[in-house]
Image (cartoon, rainbow, N blue to C red; front, top):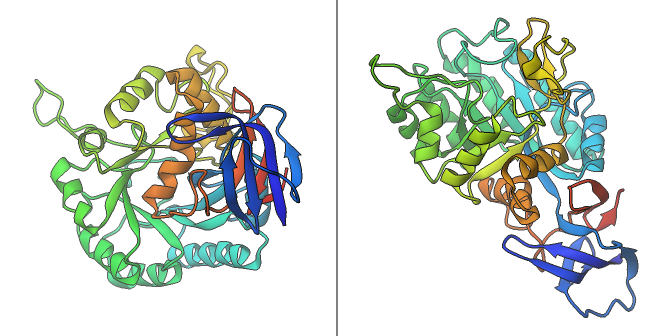
Length: 380
């Protein structure tokens, strides 16, 4: 199939090409730029919309209504219609090993069947994080001592399909778990999350591939060794190390990460180490009766009044990041596409380039989705 997008502004990592054309054939980007011949190509008129790479959400549990564990094909399709052409389905620590393995196998089967073509693997927000942090933490069957006989069946079921493992570096024997995960899958990425680890504990895992901070400033501790000063903990360590990417949940009101903090993190980390995520969950608790939460309709709350992830799909955080920080379209496509792909080692997606997979999204100036293409085929 030969398809051409015309009358579009092409979004590249560092600049834009107005009045551009993108040529696609057999699911790949054949060429892009100005004054290209479209003879023999089926035409998609962008009508002035912007075209960037498809969004890559490395961390989301749901589409705001349905968990991946309930209906992976339906959830993946909903995300795809919002421009998420690549996604890691996130699993959580609140189930036992047998249930976790069942979830892994269910999502893997959906991806392999072709019914969820945008699922690239799993984001394992499980099993070994600090039981003090995270929603639903009272239901944590993994709070006990780390034992190889408990976790090896999970590692074996997920090997090669789980792209990211979230860990709390302060847990005793966590290095044993990390070593075994790395042995089964040398490409595995590790993230520090739901943690109050000290810098040295985090740094000890970096040689194994710890290069991500899960939902930066959320579910992380504060160390107060001395009453006169604030000690460095997870968030500060992630900011200090350039090699560590930081995830951001960017909601409309700025509850997960305050707008000023978003601007500070953006200034410190730079454009190449920020990753926007949706971290969607499904909870039905009411918005707390507090002026602080007025308008926070893209956040989930549990019935204890605590935040329980978001209701967002990744196009929402992109819009919110532009509002809260003044980020440009070039920048938010970096945060939501280029950087996640680079973190995971994908070189064939995440930016518009000759030979790359033709996963594309067309948006207006405020990041509202107009069209979505997966493997060079129009899906919306």
